Length: 292
Image 1 (cartoon, rainbow, N blue to C red):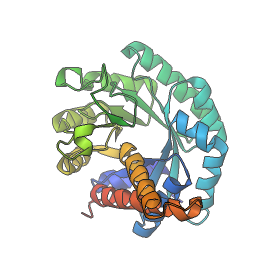
Image 2 (image 1 turned 135 degrees about the horizontal axis):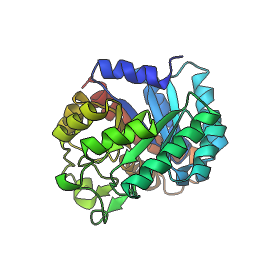
Image 3 (image 1 turned 90 degrees about the vertical axis):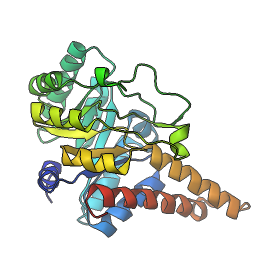
């Protein structure tokens, strides 16, 4: 099977992007894997530190390897890893990729720590895909009442192309996640569909030209479709979705409990969550892959 980098190069040549979806349980895993198989597209499954603690690091790797044995191009990312200890844990367990998130740190400290994380991960697995993050966009994949304090949500605070170029060169990361108008989580108004996240497409193009590496869009939930398309055209190669997955899971479970109030068997309730998640994933993969 081709490597994640090879799939990304192919996607970049076609001006498409690979979807990255976070999971917290088997329902999410099942939904994403089924859509990837049905659409014959590569996908990345992400687990943050909290999600890894719940699912299990080795267990997550085993699930991915089982699917890859069937020929499914599905990759596992240690999403939002904040320490060298957790970086090492993921690399030793067999994760395909790791995101070291030092975005809340001052620039110089973020650069230094990300470089250490990249070197550590590659000392364990030379082929591991390493991502860094530059520009704080919040940290909670949740329904928010207000924007995260300190998040870079104005052009003045977005990731600067010259800093991105230096960061990529000195850390040696394979991919960079910049702040370009994106934000983790969904505001209540976004859940209701009243507003959409808007991206600075020009800034994405400038960053791509400056650093020339793969670019990752975090906090993709709730972004306007036309902005996704433009961002991918200007150099975004991976798009992260989490809050929309969690919201679909919640709505699916609520619908199942309402329809079957006396049911106690999880395997009879969880299919509604799987179906709801599949709908979200399929819609987004159609968009990211240029099929919509």
